[in-house]
Image (cartoon, rainbow, N blue to C red):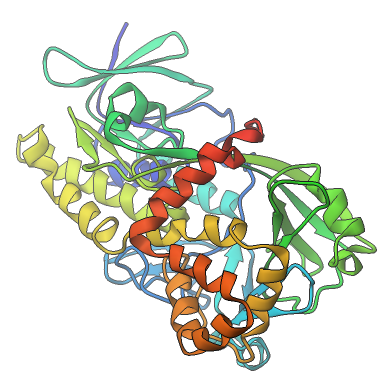
Length: 450
């Protein structure tokens, strides 16, 4: 027997959970379908950073209010309760392969003295956040169905949408696809036919203790050049919200762990490292959808965007989409015109707010330079640059800071200047596709979630 709803939401991550909470509060008959048996259990590697406090991001100036334990979204006009653990960090430092030179985004020493006012942003417990959203959704009548692996989404003859999964059939006036960068909803409904697929980026993440790092309350990233390999590896170190001596430690593949911790120029940081737990991830990279609507299906968060819309961006999408559907049903406009407010908001807040290709700069910046070039390049930065965690902005900040030094670089390392010329936004899409063709994004097999 087919179960019928006003709204069916696929995926109980931040975007789907927020959509469910909002739809429930609005009185919509709603089903939330999730493949995991415990939606609040974090089985995928996630840095859990609040992205971002340091800048306007996806059209919002978001921040966390410690006093009232709320995530604040003032331009979108809502807050989210969060009473779990948090931990500040005060700069982002990009280290050279030699482990010595570094590019500092933010003055770590000065910022940490200022406490909350000086932080670049913070980390938090994503599981606690999801628990709260899902509890509110259930309290307001949303039917949360776990262990449902969706295997079909299609338009019905009467203008609604049919979803199948777990041997059951669900029918809704609208469907929200909130099932991540590898969205099945997007694939089933044909959203991906006009998108460019750049590749899948796998990774392994560890929660570790026993580190001896130069900046304990900062985000640290670095390149490492392993012997006899085609491309360098890289790693991230981010403070953990769970304990002051714990850190999130991420890299592309499991085999990189031993090299980084035992043989690399950074090995002194890891003499007493102890792994607490390990998780894997795979992030698919697509060009954004032209429009996040098709045949009464709305995409939110990662399913519509390039790479990741972050937890914060996904929650904004979920809330906006659910409210737009509420208005469409109240106005008896169960079609595109009824949800036009969400479509227009998404375009304004995501593809029109900033060009996703600026974030693509991360990939060639990591892999285009030799070890010597990268060591030299990062040694040029003698003072902290602007404090930012915005991945769409950081490439521009670095380029602007390098501009006055280009004549010096031309004289001392001309090969670097030629490569920097390639890192222009109109060429970056082809550069990333070349990396895919050359094998980097495909030569490592995809890793399972969990």
